[in-house]
Figure 1 (cartoon, rainbow, N blue to C red):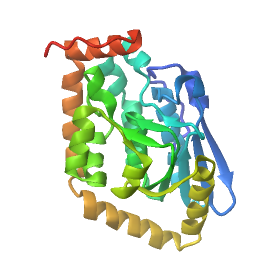
Figure 2: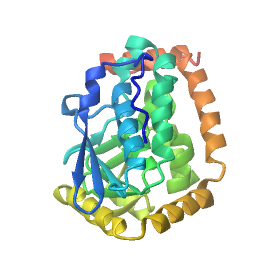
Figure 3: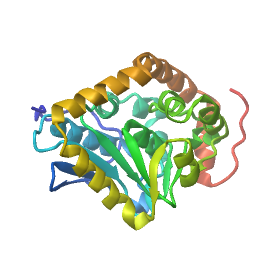
Length: 274
């Protein structure tokens, strides 16, 4: 069972943001986790990531949950991490917050099937959240990208490791180094999205598939997922550790501070290579 002991460690963000992560139980052993912060384009603050991790930790041990769908709404999945939190608390503290790191680890090690139902943009941490899922159902308005380089940053929640495994090294390199996104049709063509549907059908179709998977033998399903993860990412944990060191070094640069300031001030950044 999940530990219910209150966590007294600081959370670098507004604790009220946790309410933007909403869970719903559906028939057929399915849980839907919805990101609902439209005024911030569903940007993920630390309390939101921590809450998602908490819900998944509970679902991991709940026999009445066999498959989980993660979604936003019909217009947006998530525009990424909350950059204002980076400026307020400092990038290093936010990114290296143990509660945040633990929550992402809960996501990436979740033993039951995870499906992403993506409409609109899935950028930065939003794309990395979709990458943590076993497969993606995309609305035809979906876009997937890692734009961190545009603000002097790097993908720091697994993007440098999972994206090459999902779309191949060539396309991943293009996306990570240019910061340019791919659309739903491209995502489908390269195997990132398994289906593309009208936005109103994205969540219902993901739920249909979740209920289908949940009707299969749970032990067989979870065992199969574990085997697939070993097959395609045996060195993923080492890669993620390397990524974390690289992202922390980058976050200490002056260019990263300039990039975030330029983003919030809606101007072009002036990078100097320091």
